[in-house]
Amino acid sequence: MTDFKALAAPGVQQLKPYIPGKPISELERELGIENIIKLASNENPLGPSPKAMAAIQAEMDELALYPDGNGFELKKVLADKHGVDMDCITLGNGSNDVLVLLAEAFLKPEDAAMYSQYSFAVYPIAIQAIGATHQMVPATDWDNERPMGCDLPAMQAAITDQTRMIFIANPNNPTGSFLQADELKAFIASVDKDVIVVLDEAYLEYSPADERVDGSEWLGEFDNLVITRTFSKAYGLAGFRVGYALSNPDIANVLNRIRQPFNVNSLALAAAAAAVNDDAFLERSMQVNAAGMKALEASCQRLGLRYVPSKGNFLLVDFGRDAMPIYQSMLEKGVITRPVANYGLPNCLRITIGNETEMARMVEVMEQVCG
Ligand SMILES: *Cc1c(COP(=O)(O)O)cnc(C)c1O
Image (tube, rainbow, N blue to C red):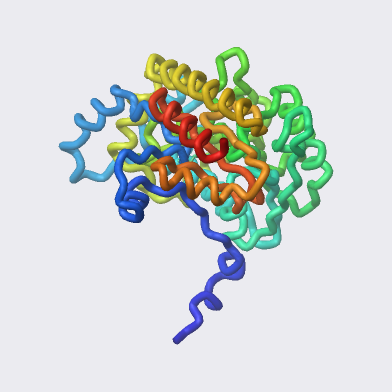
């Protein structure tokens, strides 16, 4: 038998595949139980925006046709929302698609790209798939004023002549940590103009408006800045796979050369365009998240568990011992959370904020298992 792994590109051979949250259907099959709740993939417990649902219905009759490969309608509403030209927008099959396009378009095997420890697992995968060097910079520690997040001075110091791209998630996943506008902006300003800084703002919508750090406001100042956003989290459209990048038009033009011509499907385009301006839905999503976050934090305090203050729709909780048996016990009670040992956090679980009923159950189960 041919050794196909040996035939794979060198970077690919060394990849560790992404480990997704356990689907409800899988746990149903394994344990034969019902009423499972999934708090493992930072999905929106409210489901999709009702406006998105209506748009999907209206689009169904057109399914025999290819989608609009330029995504005109969605780009138009996004351009209005962000006050940018349409040629600054690159649509993706989830923002994951855009992250991979950035790596494919701009990284060569002799280059390096940087990210923080305990940040999104897709960054090293995208970098390594190219065969480029991935530079992981240690995160701040638990005792830091802003724990378990990007250490920007350390990242700055770690930049080499090889470094061509820097990925920063703000707020960060899986820790929920966040950076302030002034420190982040100063960091971007300090980076050479031929190094692309990718600011992944998948959880931006969960910050109250007056605390939001919105990197898209800096696009006019920094040609090498790329912002990525997604419809998978606050907009409740994870199953549809749609996200986008905002950048200067020259970067968008490069990405457009390697993008699959129809990388976003027609239902997703319609759903996202309808959801963009559903402020009432976003507002409700934020309120449900804030209430659920409070309940989970209170439970952690009762149990004496530390956690990272989070500006996302999830909380990283440290159980102070191997978290796998805790994860398993909660699974058996029908609650799916996310182990993060693959991120180097074997004592922690990442818990997504669900709706009120789900959080009541989550807290009860966690207190049974840990109490
Ligand atoms: C969930 C997430 C994404 C979004 O992924 P999609 O491909 O848009 O579903 C991007 N970045 C981070 C940090 C995330 O947590």
